[in-house]
Image 1 (cartoon, rainbow, N blue to C red):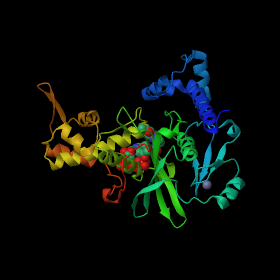
Image 2 (tube, rainbow, N blue to C red; image 1 turned 180 degrees about the vertical axis):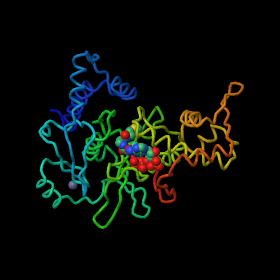
Image 3 (cartoon, protein in one colour; image 1 turned 135 degrees about the vertical axis):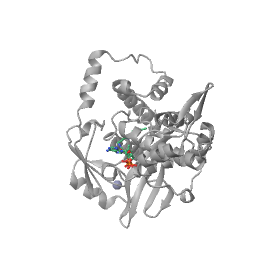
Length: 334
Ligand code: ACO
Ligand code: ZN
């Protein structure tokens, strides 16, 4: 007889296959490779008709609004909730365990029983009222999956990962006497061959444009620094993702260039910031601070030009106080 774990695994694999079959077009190269590695036989490309059907299906926003904590939030995109939620236009989330329900009364009943007051996992950062929790997808599978369902409502181009085991989730919260309320999060693969230090990032709509996005990005680079690695976000980036990253990279790099009066190499910039050299080069090229001389990229940073760019770069976002980060890189436990 199959054990429960194996049954669950088989079910997850089937669900994943089914989902990937309809979403193969939206997969990143990395995700494609991951699926290829599972040696799925007979997984042909979708024909034009199935493709159209898939596009029609995922184009339609299924859930229109969600209730989460004290907010009612309008959703942006389709998210593949289980079939029993097909008839819902509104879902009620427990803001702590992220379980979702069809009716308000169910949520009220749940809130009387749910004893979580913050995300499961370890609090790895606390500064004033801000806390960051690290949630291991393997130890908190249901939470990880609920978070993915929720996040997909605001992420257009990402494929939902059922296999949350492979990820760590960094959940940012604003804390008060009622508990720690989720503001946003980013996910990170436990092992990335492509040196991705962030898979998906989200600031919940009520908290957007307040600097939390740049905080989450800065946090992902602080983790990379602790790992002694350079990192880059998983591609493709959404428009808002690209804007946020461009803003972050620009500000961080310009600050250092200003301090060093431009006398610094791309490699040194990468070592100091954990930003991948390609992203540094692309940012500086966009700012027209790079010249190509004798087969090499050289930084040309006129102080006046730097000041002009810094002024245009906008606000810096919320700072990460590294002294408040208590974290060691992930190690597989035997
Ligand atoms: N209009 C114009 N510019 C914007 C907007 C907007 N609506 N939102 C963010 N920006 C730009 C601005 O340059 C802003 O800096 P500024 O406020 O100093 O001008 C910068 O992005 C970052 O602003 P933050 O307040 O730090 O970021 P925020 O908390 O709003 O989060 C994020 C940014 C995470 C991209 C958010 O918009 C979001 O969750 N979007 C939906 C999900 C998404 O697209 N995620 C990225 C996918 S790519 C990936 O996951 C690898
Ligand atoms: Zn709950």
